[in-house]
Image (tube, rainbow, N blue to C red):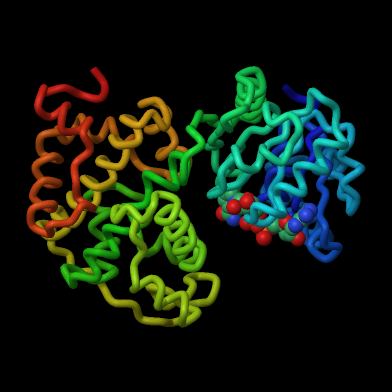
Length: 388
Ligand code: NAI
């Protein structure tokens, strides 16, 4: 699947990284962007990235030159006409995406696959703008797309299996890890990861521990590379809040996904995280952030509450056939760097222990939010493992 011509629509953070990815893998990329300013920025950014990698010794001078030649930039969508694959990465808006798909379909050949990088919209709804929706596939890359291996391949209701397989093979050929996800809100990662943030925010809200202590607990006991608050600050509290809000709405206000007022207030105050210099932490030079309370017993409790909620979510996704057991675990490891797949983790901890914790939380709080997944319950009752 090398040497393809890949048309990319939208030259923002994701589009430019996807074009770069294609070029890194011996494909030619053509990036179309509606805003001349954004097009210039995309070109500058990609060239800066190539230069940086060359300076680090990752490419030779001729390789860097060839990479640059493999990516062209245009302000006319017509120039994408000969693409073998088109990947759309424009703003997250149904109408804009539908217009783009309908126009792109009229330009390209019948065999061209049309991929959308949407993270929260329905692939099926976007595909409905096309005369032939069987060629539209969700191809959800993770930021930064040239580093993160995961790509969620999301068939819409009308996508043909042939096109799904082709999309998967292309991504695999780019040394990525494709997983297949059902077209449901948040796909795999943005759905299953919600309690990592949501439950940490609940623990903070209830004043069980402060921000640095919760982060420390998840890193020291759970082995996560970053704590939930560090990660929210890195992603941007505005972006993270918006994803939570959209998943919450899309699941008809299921309390498991309820956003937090604490994070909303940060967004209202413009404390978006690293990008604004302040979020849950202060990033100003010389700023003194609080030290965590290094209490191992408390850390274990915090970790166990959050991990139980994450495993519950993964088990629920498996029961609802959102993805296979292997893909659920791979997605969390390759898309958000979890140290272990959640279902594998459940086997190691023991389903019974997790079920006990969830049942206790549900009784204690009297909230639907903590209801145990039916599959987890069955596994615990029958002494079964997710992997056996
Ligand atoms: P962005 O705002 O950085 O870039 C979007 C670009 O699309 C802008 O440069 C805009 O000028 C351009 N655009 C808007 N309408 C257009 C049109 N009709 N034709 C051509 N270009 C058009 O957004 P970002 O972050 O790159 O997101 C793009 C898509 O990728 C969204 O669907 C988003 O949900 C998804 N995504 C974003 C991730 C992230 O971490 N930023 C991660 C994974 C997916």
